[in-house]
Amino acid sequence: MLTAKDFFDLSAFRHADLFRNDKWVWQAVADLGPYLDQWFAGRHRDIRGEIADTARLHGDHIYIGEGTVVEDGACIVGPAIIG
Image (cartoon, rainbow, N blue to C red; front, side, top):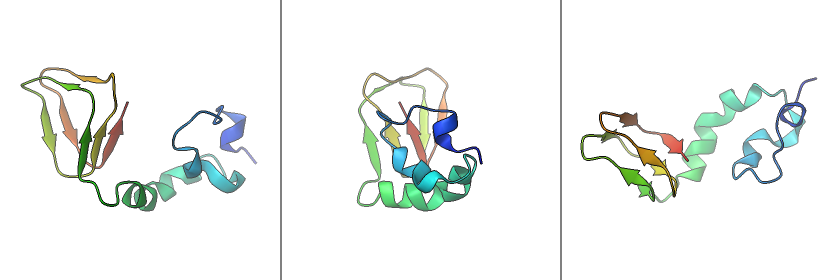
């Protein structure tokens, strides 16, 4: 069985819980919706990076990490975790 540990070093990955229990590596895709619902619980947007004036953010559940730059003309549609 190919697990996430066969492809990635998850020791410093903030979202390593998404790959818990040594499931098939692609099982994370099926688990992503519920995981994001739980991760975003209580917050709608958390913008720590730099957003260009002409960039557009649509919807809730958007996290833009520190040091992230969203360039002119970009369109981010939540749920999204970037950076």
